[in-house]
Length: 253
Image: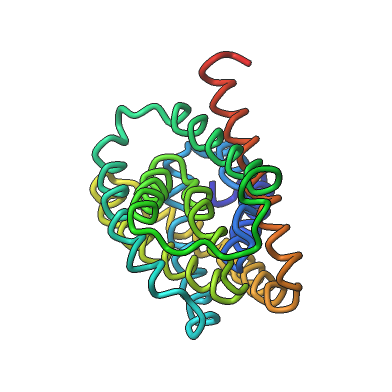
């Protein structure tokens, strides 16, 4: 695989998309894992990408180290840890397509409510809620481990809080940096890491970091209103993709 041009033709665009996501545009990585699945098995793809994501996390956390919502992290991370543990325990028998369809439907309904429902009729930030934070943190941790789509549940809790661009990006960066570190022992226990995978991660890293830096640069320059419209739009597209993938596999649609 180290000399396979098809792998790099797919993997380089994928890690660039991950870089934009880590830079602050949650949801931009929507096509990344499906792209990688064209050339490597899903769990190997996750093992190749995880070290890249962890380095990107360090860059993003450093960039937004002074702007994050401490309360959101305190409320969401315990649930995320439980969700990760549940994902690790159930990874061998859980049906990922059921999870994709369920999360996709939730995100789809969330976006419709934000645009046309009760949430569209207020411009005020929704206050923190411990129960909701624990729930969505748990769902984010679980889906991050099982289907590598933890960003959608995180966004469903975070976006209504209407943080500043920098605070939202910083909070997401710290949250997923911790989530990715917690994944490492589980990945080690099921033998996903190998010398070849680490070499592939290292080869892809420069492009990933350049895209990450580009995402951070854009976040700092896009007006707040446009930034949130982009994030809701990306989440909506992600919901449709998850519904399509899950529904096609389950029902043959």
